[in-house]
Image (tube, rainbow, N blue to C red; front, side):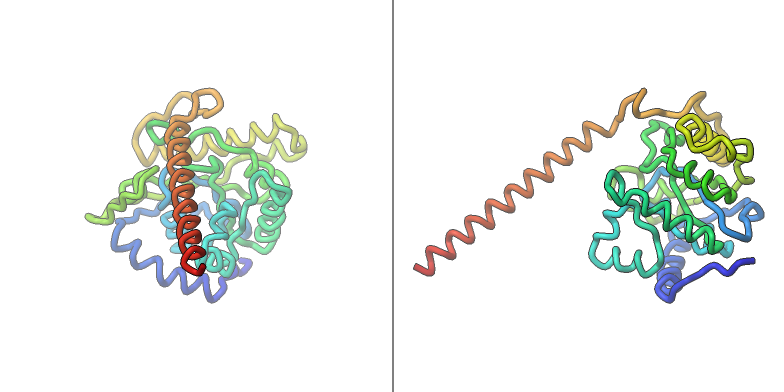
Length: 271
């Protein structure tokens, strides 16, 4: 087994985060036998902003200190960004000239035997019933380039602690959180086809179908006949996000105006 790296900061963060998670959740872990010994990609569904912590809790408890592909904006947050860097997490620069940097860093981590985590949806699901929606093809590109195992891991319950699209934290009473890993997704027949759009979409759809099947087992429910597709079904969060952006801009404008008035008063006082 290749050793999986942990910096001192990573170990410290694990020591800090795991005890509170045990206090607010009642975890059920299944499927750890499907986690490979070498490098692999762990893919999961995304319902709550708490998902990364419960997902990491499962992997860490089973001997895999995960390396997350995370939005670059998180690395710009004071303190948090420094901690993420020190813990060897991987920033994703979406829509910029540095967008490919994440793939390069992820490939290097996989080559060193690390477990790299990707939430293929790229954001919290927009499905009204919280099923996985269509995934982005970045994970498929990484999988086809590296040919490492892609392990589908579904989780359910983190949203009871931190519901989606809200800051209402509900730690008590303890909430049941279930995380289940399945066997690696079969992509063998796609490796020689090249990374054209059709192949990437097929690989992505297989990955999302595997995650959905794992989630259906946890929930004991039948998933939708097809995944929610924002391009086809619309984004139910669009109006909310737009209104939020307008409020944020208005607050910024008010703050700027107040600062300008204070500066003007200061100048008058010096005359």
